[in-house]
Image 1 (cartoon, rainbow, N blue to C red):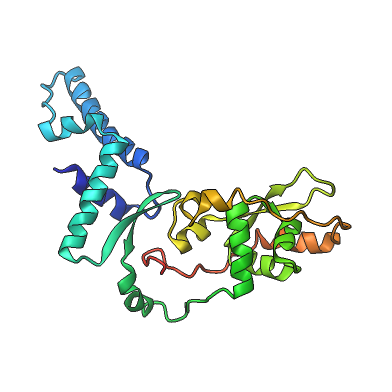
Image 2: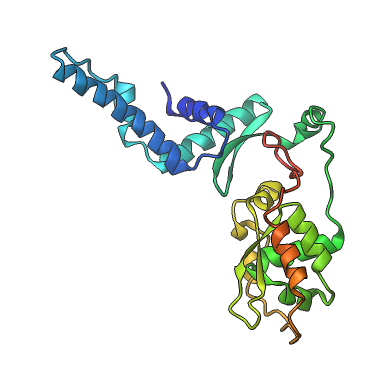
Length: 241
């Protein structure tokens, strides 16, 4: 039995992404389980059967081997023209439908229409993504306009969340991106954003000093971040475009 086929079986069976080290652990665990069975047989007086060579060889499976096999699987899928591929996201690897088949898959979900963010919402999201965690005042200093509505929209769509409070007067809320953000835009981490290293070092305009916003406004934003999130644009089996 090939390691690549085992990886494929695990990814098909799992509803959640699997990290390379977790896949390797599951493979080694299967070998350890087989060894335990042999030990119990010996203790019971039965003659233990030796492990098959292919199974014994999996005892030292590493995360590097997992990544190599996944690359090989993706090449096989591409050569065969398969409709799916394996992609890595912040929480691990998962099987996704290829983007070119997305319009067909979407017919299974007629009630879920793709929604596009407005220009101002995309600008606000980009600032949060590149400079997170960031306060609302800092976002507004960059955009030059109030951002309450845009932040609320991003919170409602579960693209950003409240990540804590800044050690500043008034303890303003800090905003950061969510796992849905990474899934939707098809990236593993902030470092995958275009020109991430350069843009994260650019000095931002300093927020102007102002009185803290009313408590009810901050409470509304805080509550929205823990409410029922809107469905993301992409389906779990459909790689977002």
